[in-house]
Image: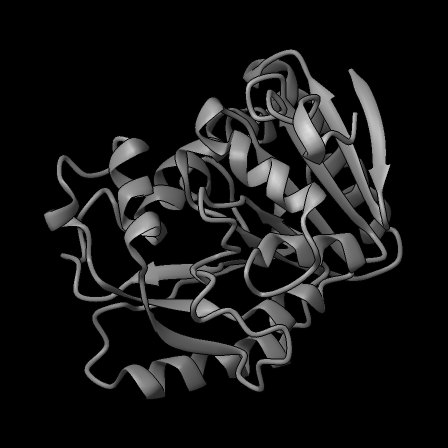
Length: 259
């Protein structure tokens, strides 16, 4: 493992996905244990994406007091069948929540009859349970959650909102193997906004894989702006970015070199 810092962001580079997943789970587990020595329970927001697979598999193995954790997820498609495996709530049920017994698990409902009321309901929950830890990924277009560049707002007044997904975001869902064609990918989603994610005390970004190489380069090398939403991580006081050699593969070349 090699390690660098970019602004306030700590970056850890691992040889591959298994090593990254193991290390991220170990670090998160230790942080959870420490926080639970100070609090009765803690609140964690999880990401739903194949990039999280190794991390979530390792996390299940840790000796964590899940009964003292309230769990949330950060985004959800609008209009997808409630049992569809591509649904982000269903993804986390399969990869994590059916294997552990959390104090509470709160799901976004992308099939709610009134999406604005659903945003308000979930926003109220996040106010009631202030976030201690966010575990997220970074999209190929540098989005955080479903805050694609055209809807990302570092000063967003909302906590949860309805967004339309850009072409790059929808293409990523095909690249990830979640959908066969882009026509199958929903065009709307619910997402926790960037300021709401940023309020978390600790942020862990798990971002392996060759498809994320350009996004990682932009995250670490571009000006901090909504054009590349993930650049905001460089301003967080307690954020760690976990990448592997594939997602770090463009960092050592050209004018964007930082390693």
